[in-house]
Image (cartoon, rainbow, N blue to C red; front, top):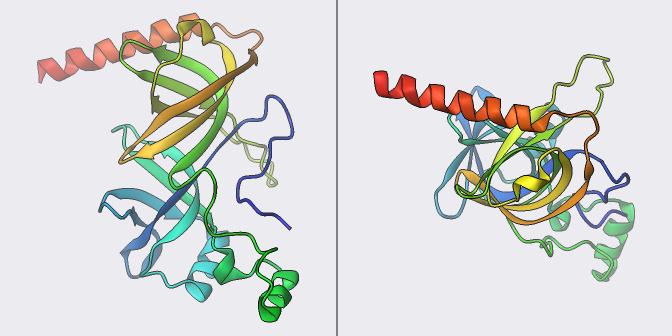
Length: 224
């Protein structure tokens, strides 16, 4: 029986971006349930979408008007605001993960049931990918995450995540593992581990191109 919504890493260079956010899901339109916002206890609203496989669970088993601990995939939009894809919920006390849990609950033995709370706490994110940009003096970094191949054989494009935090420029071009925490609309670095260099990657050139793009955007902004 799984006792954690984030599975252990099985490969040294295993890509992923997954997190846990507690909040109330509010659909943007009563007739369009899958697109809305997660509202945390401080009233911060984060854009969110519900993936199809979890929608039935939400509508049948959860009190949507109450906060829950959601399992989410993070994404970053062009305006630097966080965007979340809801893929699950961690609430063993409500969902009773399997028949063994149901029997244990009926018999009053709750010791083997997974707890609703997790040691990492709310708003924890595990991110593993390529460090393609870092500006320690500004506390900015970008990680590229590659997705697993899809069952329908369609191409799974990599995506980039922006985080707040300091990582040495010496780590550019390396595969890194990050522990991050959500604060409002951003992910903030807590810890990281450098795993290994990415072969055949001209990361420094990408960093220069990234810096050049930022400068061009600033010029356009001043010209308006």
